[in-house]
Length: 102
Image 1 (cartoon, rainbow, N blue to C red):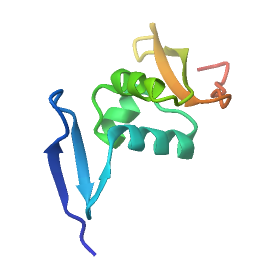
Image 2: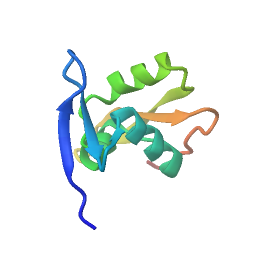
Image 3: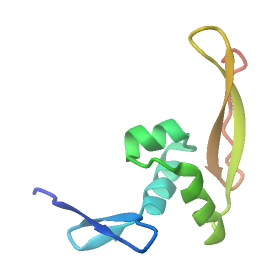
Image 4: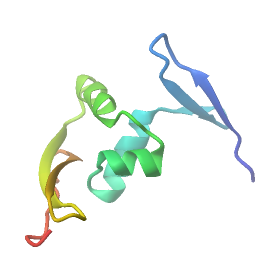
């Protein structure tokens, strides 16, 4: 069975919702489902895997809606041996565990 994706403007802030067979799935729904299935999400994962470009804004909306979503900053090594910090968002007390050598 083939699914048709139809994008519509949701409100004046131009947020988009996808309509799949008549059921509206919000970006917040996608993020919540992704975190439940994978434990956490980063901005890069949201952009590449879910097509969501403003993860922090959606997380803020989720917090306002009463979802217990939290953030932890993790130091990662870049390809040029410098370091950066990446935000990992998770739900409740399911804080991600990182290897020491990352």
